[in-house]
Amino acid sequence: MRMLLASALVVGCMSFPTQSASSTVSAPPTTRPDSASTAARQVTPVDTYEVVHTWPHDRKAFTEGLLFHDGDLWESSGQYGESTLRRVDLQTGRVLKERFLGREYFAEGVALLRGKLYQLTWQEHQCFVYDPTNLSVESALSYEGEGWGLTHNGTNLIRSDGTNKLRFLDPRTFEVKRTISVLDGDRPVLGVNELEYVRGEIYANVLPDRRIARIDPRDGALLGWIDLTDLVATVKVSDEDAVLNGMAYDEAGDRLFVTGKRWPTVFEIRIRESSEPRSPDPLR
Image (cartoon, rainbow, N blue to C red; front, side, top):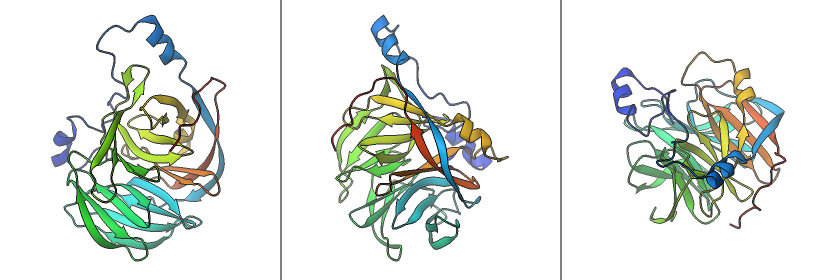
């Protein structure tokens, strides 16, 4: 999701969902928590990581969505007048194929399900459906609210809108089949953005956090955090909008890639799991 746009858009972005650097990730409870809920929050596992490999990334790409398919990265890059859907060579970062959206669209999350590419738009209430072989638009699906992140569980598309809500959608009609609320204990996790489905869990970038949330798709409960604070600190950027955003999972190779808006690098990382107990992987 975008942080700050042109000055004409800043005011509009200040009402939630926003992406300003001062945004709060988890809202405080409306009532004083009891000791049990406080304890539950304190034991939320926090995983770390190790960098396995680095790959070049286009510094002009305002990454809003990322996925891995057929050996390449597929990326949705945002900003009005600049939004694209592109296929990118992982090894070199070179754009192999690209489609520009109209100037009136701000591109957001992207997912590939059953041979179709789906790309959200921020406030235009349109999800474009593409043929991945040539990036031709086959149809457009409408939805209410903002579009931020998109992934799938093999059956339904899963959409975020910058709140703590995740909606499971019929890929043919975009009808909402069910909705879950992302909670860390009893606190809503706000700013849920780019999504990726990884080994039966939903991974989510959360703005403005430098951690990835691991979410149970059954009920939205937070299974843990992946702390990428140190990784973000290694990225040399001068743009305050250049935040952590963009995940792609290679299921066959069990590889996780992460990057950010206008970052020069895509990182392949391996998760180092916390010793804290956690729930078993949910069923799809």
